[in-house]
Length: 78
Image (cartoon, rainbow, N blue to C red; front, side, top):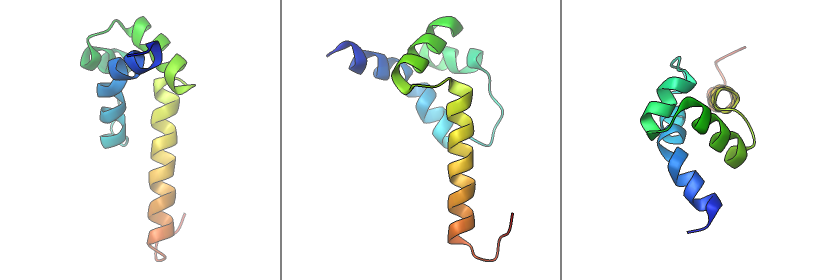
């Protein structure tokens, strides 16, 4: 497996958690524990693989889910 594939597999638990729990507060420390990494290592690998920090990624997911909800339910408003 190449270096990028290995890194993505290392952060996969954090990605899955963020996608399923984007509305819940979380810290880099919590995500690091899920991946059995130090917080600094998770932060480094996440940013290298995803191009943004874990919290920025979480915020993007949250915004996408809200936007999708607004598009699907015409009765909702901002």
